[in-house]
Image (cartoon, rainbow, N blue to C red; front, side):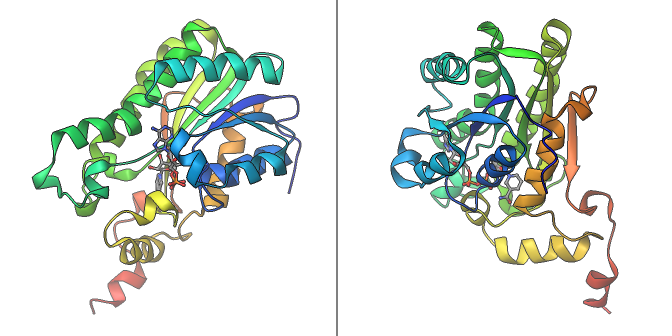
Amino acid sequence: MAYNLLKGKRGIIFGALDENSIAWKTALSVHAEGGTFVLTNAPIALRMGQLKELGEQTGSEIIPADATSEEDLKNLVTKSMEILGGKIDFVLHSIGMSVNVRKGRSYMDENYDFTAKGWDISALSFHKVMQTLYKNDAMSEWGSIVALTYMAAQRSFPDYNDMADNKAYLESVARSFGYFFGKDKKVRVNTISQSPTATTAGQGIKGFNGFINFADQMAPLGNATAQDCADYTITLFSDLTRKVTMQNLFHDGGFSNTGVSREVMDKFE
Ligand SMILES: NC(=O)c1ccc[n+]([C@@H]2O[C@H](COP(=O)([O-])OP(=O)(O)OC[C@H]3O[C@@H](n4cnc5c(N)ncnc54)[C@H](O)[C@@H]3O)[C@@H](O)[C@H]2O)c1
């Protein structure tokens, strides 16, 4: 359902890899709500993924950028303003990758070069994106910046590995930068803490299938899907949430506040 909530708004969407990506669904929903945007991903992801297709579907240009490269980000921000014809109203940071997870290294056996690389991609990149936007005065007043996170930032989940630490850092950056962006430019910054979702990044986590089913049976409303996440993100980009900032917003069907559910209890009785 479209409400024209983003009519006239311009943005940048990071992290659409394929049609399962949360950023992919968000791009389609933003388009349906009347927003225009530039799509971006790491050069390697552009070679492997299907972003061109999404660009055609939404009439969007694609600018490659490695989110760890300040030079790439500056180019992205400057070119996006030229292409879209003005300052940016919304930004989605939907980026995550743990090299330790990918290479099968456990949390008790980290390779610290991998840890540093994963942190740069998954956490510090959010600061780099915001610093680039801030320094280039690229955000419109009452603009909105959203990054995606997971509850392993607050509670331990054995197989989430070093991504848990990356998410804790990411959420902290949202608060810290949110203060300055709010004060100086009237821009809001939030993280959405999303349910486990079947995407390339999600399925990289060991035991993902058991885990997604467990979360679904715990949450009174069931897991939030990628499309649900897209819908929620639209509200945060819209003018209806102007005073929401520096928050970590749980979007998980109630999982984070559930002690135990009847369904899970039944398995132990
Ligand atoms: N899937 C889940 O269960 C889940 C749950 C909560 C939060 N999240 C978060 O949602 C976000 C999106 O992930 P997703 O689940 O849609 O998976 P995805 O694999 O579709 O998206 C991850 C994206 O990060 C991009 N990326 C990796 N390295 C990059 C770099 N150096 N520069 C720019 N982009 C880079 C990838 O190309 C990819 O597009 C991530 O932050 C993830 O941690 C996912």
